[in-house]
Image 1 (cartoon, rainbow, N blue to C red):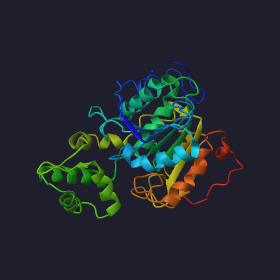
Image 2 (cartoon, rainbow, N blue to C red):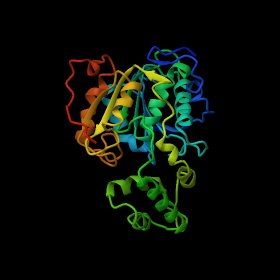
Image 3 (cartoon, rainbow, N blue to C red):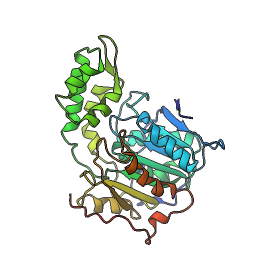
Image 4 (cartoon, rainbow, N blue to C red):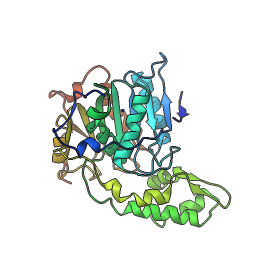
Length: 326
């Protein structure tokens, strides 16, 4: 059943910090908030063991993951929790919107429910949140809580976001100021900034259409003021590593994971593997809102292996050898 709900220690064997690193030890000391979430509970009633926790990207929500959550639950027979990160979906609108703060919310969620043997999956912004959680696991989660990490089409790099993100914020502001009544009116304005129908459909999942007062359920101004922060990352290899099972999923048509930032990712996550899928970052990412079924199904063997074995991380596993030249 797909249900919407609302709602730190021992050292992890997979994460460690260099001694006397006071900066790293403060990364996720933000005050957490309760997050809304969608859950899929297996027929045996298990709500804690082997949980898969899913984190969406910027402008996304738990609802984007409904179909994937149901498929994961059906194929893996494990509890699935898709979260609305702060300032997204129906979770609270609150500052700061930083990766440390968002990671603190996720850590709070995991601890509050005593989840164990957790597989954490994050796409784009959610991928950075997931990496932050893993790198802070030694200080914030009981031992062996986090078992596996899947990072979808993002790297632990710092830099400015591409200009389309600010364009989307401007489009949303214009839509709200126009006091439109229908989704079509909103789409007409959005088309001035973005032509891709998949991206437009994704962005408009946040629209709450009402006569003469349509608005976005996300805090557009707050997110706009935090856009530059979304290009950051709170850890460096000198501060922390996570040595647990880590899979990076790269979109072949995307440059978010590239030859320049892979060495950094390998320092932070030394056991990482990369799987390349024939997708882009927006709209056709293997786990995004409008994902192609055949591409998302390709990920299931890797995710399902988390249940009893780590075979996908063994040297015998044959990954697609796509040159990464971006």
